Length: 111
Length: 302
Image 1: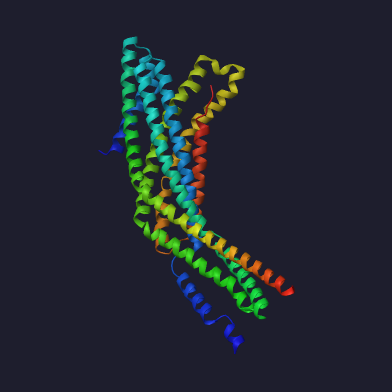
Image 2: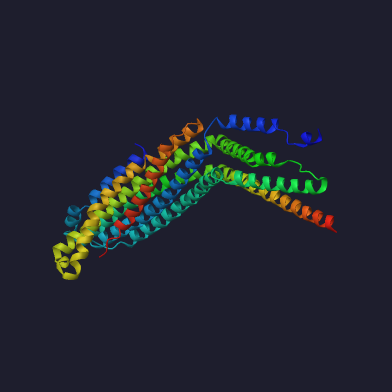
């Protein structure tokens, strides 16, 4: 039985214990029986919780192992975008400088 | 002779253009990369919402169970255990959300690069520079360096070259991280299925317990018959009865990541069906709407 199957099996048991007929039946019992039932049912819920949390923690750990490589991908994509923007900025600056030089040359020619 | 020699060498742009066009003929287009990036971005957003819904339903299910337990007896140890488990679930959900945010950033950058207007901006910048160089040459030597015809080719040519370079970067990115992306998408599929199963179970518990607390009990005791309570009781009954139907839609959503995997495999082979991408985006957007519905459905009021 896999962990997923165990969780599903325990969840079915829990749903039965939390159904309206069972709740109504236990309601009619004495306090010590009700307390024992609440404790046992609560522990079953707690066990299912722990299995579900452990399942998600394992998935989170698997994803965490992939994180550094995903981050490298992010850095490289961002680097490519930045390099393109930088290149455009450099060309724009160069264009402005040449435009300025042209105006200076034009001005010098008229003096 | 001098004027002819100063003209831009025509064979070079033609060869470059031809090379870029030939290279561009293989593999996916930037549009396909952009669509894939969009699908991944929408997926990450849907996953984030699902993680929030899953966390909230986990806590709400405990609250309903504690209310049910209190009808029988109070157990401090059980209350403490549920609260500890809530905290542990919140913690792991946040870890998963952190990773989802990273994934969203990755897909977002992929899309940003694929839809970048840099080729056009680069072309315009180079053209403006060439025009200024021509104007300067005209002033210094009495003749332009490039001439209008050559300048006219600079913009489109640069656009094609930079577009090809972007496609090459996108292709390299997917090739370099091939195994990682495959492992990521497989794990995401496992996560989505685990979340869908958990959400479905919590929702079933919540609706069963809410049905008893908000529907059956008020009707038995006559509390629901009081005029101010009647409309609320009707509304709660509808919410409780429709909640499990909405939860079943999550089972369909679990298959979407498989489609994202298939989409990735198609992209790697240079064969991406644009319709499949659009369908996936539509499915994921409907997943988001299911997640939102689940949140509002469990908001039944007493």
